[in-house]
Length: 456
Ligand code: HEC
Ligand code: HEC
Ligand code: HEC
Ligand code: HEC
Ligand code: HEC
Ligand code: HEC
Image (cartoon, rainbow, N blue to C red; front, top):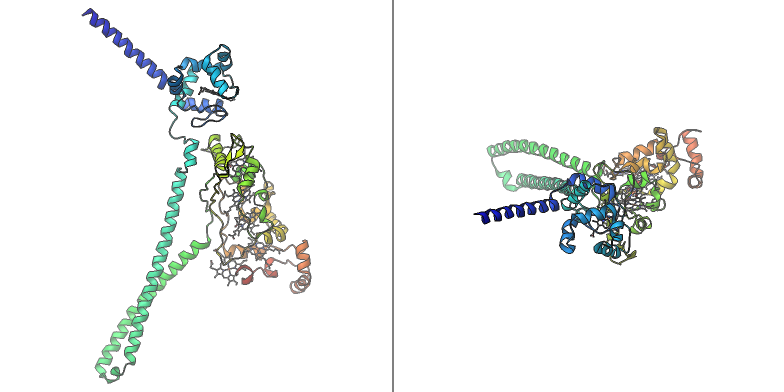
C-alpha cells in the first residue's frame, strides 16, 4: 500500500514535470505579442523560414532541444547577451558564432524572460493570418484568386456575347432562307396555275408570316444592338482596370516616396511608339544593393517583410544569388500583365506626345490643375493620372476615341517648339490666316481629328 502511494506520488511528479516542460517548450508566451517583439527587434537579421543574416528561427526551440540538447535557459542567456555567453566558454554559442563567420548578433538585455517566451512562442506557433514570404512567392494569395475569378468572369462575359452573336447570325440566315423560299415559290410557274382562292389564302398566310417575321426581326435587332453595345463598352473602356502583377511593384514607393523619374524606367516613352515595361536589368541596377525594404511608408495591411519578399522575387527571376553576390545564369522573365492596350487598328505614338506635344500637354494640364505637388512628370500624368500615388497601376482614363479627340480639340499646339516650328512653317501662316491672328490653334487644326492619323 505504502509503496503504491510512493509510486503514485512519483508518478504525479513525473506527470507534473512532463507537463511543465511541455508547456515551457510550446505553450508559454503569447505568439501575438511575440510577433510584435520579433518584428521590432529581430527581423533585421532573422526570418522564420529562411536564413538572412542569422539563421532561420522557425521552430528554433525544438531544433536546439533536439540537436544540441539546449533548453530555454540557454536561449534566455543567448538572446539577452550572446557575447557574455560566448565569453563564458559555452560550446554551442561559440560554434554557431563561428558558423556564421563571426557575425555579431545584437544584445538584448532589456528583454525579460517573459518577452523572450513570447518571441519563442511566436517562432513555434506563428499566427496563421500573416502569410510568410514564401507563401507569397508561391503566388497563391487571396488577391490572385480574386484576379483569376475576375478574369474568368470576363471570359464568360465574352463567351456569352459571342454565343449571342452566333445565335443572331444563325437566325438571320434561317430567315433569309425562308424569305428566299417564299420568293421562289411566288415566281414558280405552278403558282400561276393556282386558282384565286389559293392565292388569297397564300397571301393571307404571307401577311401573317411577315407580321411574325417583322416582330422577330425587331427582336433580333434589339438583341444585336445590345450585343454590339456590350462589345463596344467592353473593348475600349477599362478605366480602373488594375490586374495583379507577378511582383508587387509599387509606383507609390518608387515614383512617389523615392522620387524616381518615370523616364528612368520607361525610357523609351520619349523615343519610341511604345514606352515599355523596364527589363530586369533596370531593376537590378538598384536592387543589387537594395535587398530589403526599410522604407517608412507601409501600405495598410502590408509589412516590411512582405516588401522584402517581393524584392527577393526579382532575384529569383534575374538569377541573382544574394549570398554569393553573383548571377547563377538561371533567369526567368517576369510576365507583367499589360494594362493599357489599344486595339490593333489604332496608332498611338508616345514620342509624338512626350516630345512634340510635351509643352502643349503640360500647359493644358496645368491650366486645369491647381495642385503644385503635381508638377513632376506632368506630361505622363496628363494621360495616366497620378501614377506616383498608386500602389497598383490603374487606368486613370477611359482611353477611348472620344478621350483622344476631346484633348485634341481643346489643347493648344505649341507652335514654338523646334519640331513644330520647322514642320509647320508654312502651315502656320495659313492657319493664322484661316483662324485669325492670335487665335488658338488646337491639335485638331493640324490634323488631329483626321481618321487616318489615328487609324491604320
Ligand atoms: C544584427 C543582427 C541580429 C539581430 C538583430 C538578431 N540576431 Fe539572432 N543571430 C544573429 C546571428 C548572426 C546569429 C548566428 C550566430 C552568430 O553569428 O552570432 C544569430 C543567432 C541567433 C540564435 C541562435 C539560432 C541557432 O540556430 O543557433 C537565436 C535563437 C537568435 N539569434 C535569436 C534572436 C532573437 C530572438 C532576436 C531578436 C530579439 C535576434 N536574434 C536578433 C544576428 C542577429
Ligand atoms: C485622335 C485619334 C483618333 C482619331 C482622329 C480617330 N479615331 Fe477612331 N479611334 C481612336 C481610338 C483610340 C479608338 C479605340 C477606342 C477604344 O478602344 O475604345 C478608336 C476606335 C474607332 C472605332 C471602333 C469603335 C469604337 O468606338 O471603339 C471606329 C469605327 C473608329 N475609331 C472610326 C474613326 C473614324 C471614322 C475617324 C475619322 C472621322 C476616327 N475614328 C478618328 C482614335 C481616333
Ligand atoms: C522603378 C521603375 C519604374 C518607375 C520609376 C516608374 N515605373 Fe511605371 N512601371 C514599372 C513597372 C515594373 C511596371 C509594370 C508593373 C505594373 O504595372 O505596376 C510599370 C507599369 C506602368 C504603367 C502601366 C503599363 C501597362 O501595362 O499598361 C504605366 C502607365 C506606368 N508604369 C507609368 C509610369 C509613370 C507615369 C511613372 C512616373 C510617375 C512611372 N511609371 C514610373 C516601372 C516603373
Ligand atoms: C532607381 C532605383 C530603383 C530601380 C531602378 C528599381 N527600384 Fe525597386 N526600390 C527602390 C527603392 C529605393 C525601394 C525602397 C527601398 C526602401 O525604402 O527600403 C524599392 C523597393 C522595391 C520593392 C518593395 C516595395 C514595392 O514596391 O513593393 C519592390 C518589390 C521593388 N522595389 C521592385 C522593383 C522592380 C521589379 C524593379 C524593376 C522594374 C525596380 N524595383 C527598380 C529603387 C529602385
Ligand atoms: C497623350 C497621352 C499619353 C501621354 C502624355 C503618355 N502616355 Fe503612356 N500611354 C498612353 C496610351 C494611349 C497608351 C496605350 C498605348 C497602346 O496600347 O498602344 C499608353 C501606354 C503606356 C505604357 C504601357 C506600355 C506601352 O507603351 O503601351 C506605359 C509604360 C506608359 N504609357 C508610360 C508613360 C510615361 C512614362 C509617360 C510620360 C513620359 C507617358 N506614358 C505619357 C497615353 C499617354
Ligand atoms: C492630353 C492631351 C492629349 C491626349 C489625351 C491625346 N493627345 Fe494626341 N496629341 C496631343 C497634342 C498636344 C498633339 C500635338 C503634338 C504636336 O505638337 O505635334 C497630339 C498629336 C497627335 C497626333 C499627331 C497629329 C498630327 O497631325 O501630326 C496623333 C496621331 C495623336 N495625337 C494620336 C492620339 C491618340 C490615338 C490618342 C488617344 C489614344 C491621343 N492622341 C490622345 C495631345 C493629346
